[in-house]
Every structure is written in structure tokens, then in C-alpha cells.
Length: 216
Image (tube, rainbow, N blue to C red):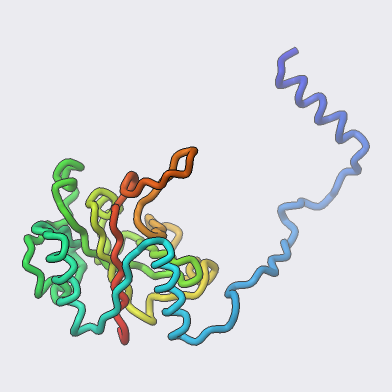
């Protein structure tokens, strides 16, 4: 007798006195009474909560108007001395109009080694979740392939507020397409060992800067 037979035999004996249920348990409605949002907040308060939670995850948060955005991007690139920036094809040209950096295109043939030579990537996002401080990418035209936001060491992500901000994860799931390649980002890449020593940049960008573009 195999170990499998022994285990299954014990399960059968344990269930011997359990009456059979004619109904399929998975066909029954499950009561889901959890909250879809924790507390009532105004739109501005929700955006403020997003900024607060992003900062808690060690993301660097900036606020700007549409007119100010190109100059904020320019300043962030200049502050790090970034000379090559990877930009997905769907990013509006105005975002990079003031930047003094060579624009590198998102190409399928680019190797990991080539992407590693790029100092920064600038993308949009699908949406942002205020209660968790999470940015969600879905591979849209202004976000590009997943790998371009995992290899460069610096990620600048533009979030249009309030249009791309939701309060909670349940609200986010209603707006996201599950068939898309979803990437959920809460702060810069980080991990820790058994002694809880934090190391950043192991699985993605060491620095995440989020620009909240107001009035968009």
C-alpha cells in the first residue's frame, strides 16, 4: 500500500459519519460583507491619502499641473544626472519636452544589458490605489512592457488626479482588465533577509518618484 492510499484511507474514515450534502458547496452564494472603502473621504482627501501612503513606502511624491509637468520631469532627471531615459511610445511628447536627455525607445529587441544602461524610465499608469499607496501598471501605451519598469534604477511615474485615483483595491479591480499584464507597485523595489535588513533595488527600481498631475 502506497503512502497516497494510506492518506486517502484516513480521510475516508474521518468522513465516514459526515452526511452527504446534495448541494454543490461551490455553487452556493458566499456572503461578502467586507467594506469596499474604509471611511468616507472627499476627492482631495483621497488624493492626499495616496500621497501619504506612497511616502510611507519610501516613494518620492511630487505635485504639478499639466503645464508644470515637463519642468518637473526635467528637474528630476537633471538631479540624478540621467542622460538616457526610456520612454514608452504612448507617453505624450509634452512630458519630455523640457528634458535634456536622450530618449531611448521601448523596443522588443532590446536586451536586459541594454536596458541596464538606461538610468531612468518615465511612464504613466493605469491607476493608483489611495488606501494602499499602490501604483498599478497594465502595459498600456504610456507604460510599455513590464521589463522596462523593472530594470532601470529610477522610475518616474505620472498619475493623473483625480481621474486615475481610486480609494481601495476592490474599486481598482472593477476598473482593471484581468487579461492585461498587471504590475502592482508599492514603493521602490525592496526586500529583507532573516535579520530584517532592508535592501532596495533587488527586484526593480531603487528609486520611485511619483508625480501627481492635478486637474487632469
